[in-house]
Image (cartoon, rainbow, N blue to C red; front, top):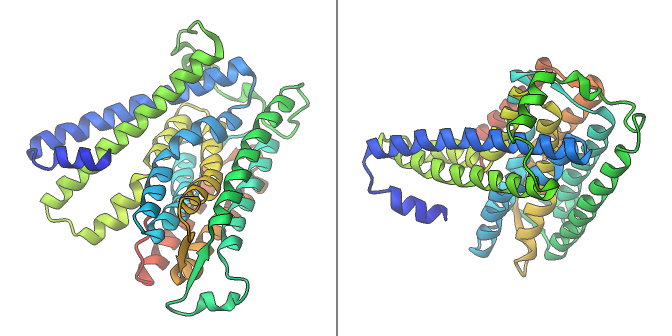
Length: 366
């Protein structure tokens, strides 16, 4: 779809492209607001914590661009892009996007649920690295020009673990609503602004049809976010080339930023409206899906799996694990609220990754 949009926009005038960019930004913001609205209503009606809704339903929608890009790249024989998309998205989501969300507003979270999901997040990243190491000669990955492999069977394993994670999340969500003591370490829902919660709920005017109606509307809003992002990125890319911005700069910024845009607008809007648990759940879920779904699906569709270049072992994998460990420490230290100070720490970790990437001559994209 993105290629068709690019072909359509290429011959348009700069004025038309500016109009497309403006309209896409407005649509992106509006659809992201609707995603937050419907996710909150679904949580309130079903009794499923917002952090779980964010880590499952919302993150499945916002990671759709990464899945599409990685699977297509694998089909076209570009395994580096497929694996880079998964790993780069985890680093961007956890460092940049969650850091920005914390700066907008401290994020209140139900600690025990976020802690449990966070351990799965870290374990997924560790598993991705472990399955990519050639254990017959593990030190070979540190040699320049070496190539490892994320095998096809590992892709199917990750997809099976993804199904188990989604099933377990649903089961845990039922347990967490069994009584007020089910999440003793979490901040109470009353910590959220009552006005914001009412606004979010009333934004849907309590439509008839129960949870199924809300889920359909949530999925449609997520589709709106994805379509708006897929229109925005080509329009900005064409405009940038017309004013002679170098291709390397575009690769390191716009392309890297593009597939994580749905997570960004959803997390920012959730943080702005006081639903920190939804923002955190979306990022945790997106990271888990990037490790298990994006890399898993891309590897499963290729007979030889995904080749993994030496740059992943030397820069990308260590950076990913570092950011995930920083986040785990933050969850433990901050307990029920991720502060603005912690947001600065996450952003600093992301900027350090960018600096190392540029120093190593890599494009820090997906």
